Image (cartoon, rainbow, N blue to C red; front, side, top):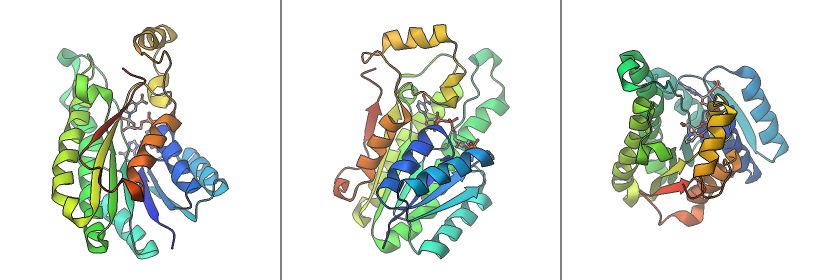
Length: 243
Ligand code: NDP
């Protein structure tokens, strides 16, 4: 029977590359997204072309408990099991501290951190029952080092790391691993807003002298989600070109 993965925020960027990677391994691929139908359909097409057993698209908000409950129930009813969860959905609302609104702080924490909490909690039940599971959370290099203009975002990504390590300890005895990947600067819509001058400055500070590609992150996620990675848990794997 094919294994099943849920990739939140799988319609674009890093999430799309992760979904496609699981498709290549023959998984049932469930992709959640916020609202970009065209991008979600494109991910579905790519997953089917790359060997997915089945592909399901789910439009919903990861920060909304009812929406997450509906998603997990739909997936459990349809496939009977959830083997892998990748908490990838994320947003930015950048601004310097003095100018950052409380709304911009709350919305980033809600999507990036509360969303990962809700989804992890919900999938932990079927995973504990089946005594198998892999949860991979997408953090960020700024969750470790901080970044001016990203107090909300870096707090959410640091929170992901603390949550990953705590949940890993809770679930280890059930054969469920929980790890985080901390990407550096990856070429997606999220970083497309930077000017060429900003990108050049960042690239100069990266030992690999290039931005990462979504596939670079997907490779790390697939490794941590592999059946053979069962003794690796509570870890944070940097994918940042040496940054
Ligand atoms: P993108 O902006 O390209 O894609 C974001 C994805 O998240 C989309 O699929 C979007 O759906 C979905 N999404 C946004 N909000 C919600 C929500 N409330 N509920 C469900 N889905 C949602 O981002 P990236 O691919 O660049 O980033 C993916 C992850 O990697 C994020 O967690 C990000 O913080 C992290 N990261 C990215 C880095 C980078 O340099 N790009 C570096 C470090 C970490 P829709 O298409 O419908 O809008």
